[in-house]
Image 1 (cartoon, rainbow, N blue to C red):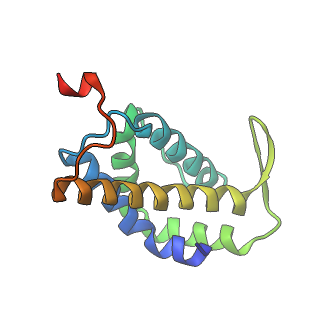
Image 2: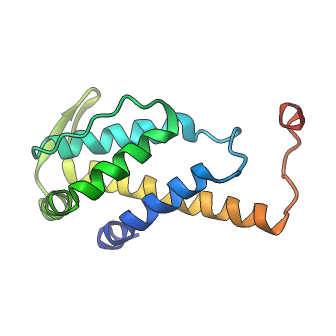
Length: 142
């Protein structure tokens, strides 16, 4: 998906993810408790380079709720930074594994949030339709 489309859907995707986290959706077999906080922290690293400070000690996938609240309070500043980073094709940032382009780092975070929202919305739809589980995990039947 194009960067502009990812950016336009960002706010809606956050709402979809948080809605799914608050639903009765069975997601214990999914990696979201690990991946969501990692991706939120990586997104916060990009924003930190441009003077925006987001920190959260909330463990697990619920960290995205803290991010959404912070985002809604600083939406204009975040939008300006996102536009600036997406327009700048040469800015780079240092990470623990080397040097990467800021635009690339941001686009990967936006793609992750988009794909996670899409996956969770499909899972909720399947659950609402009463679709059978694809795998029978014994610990889920307890």
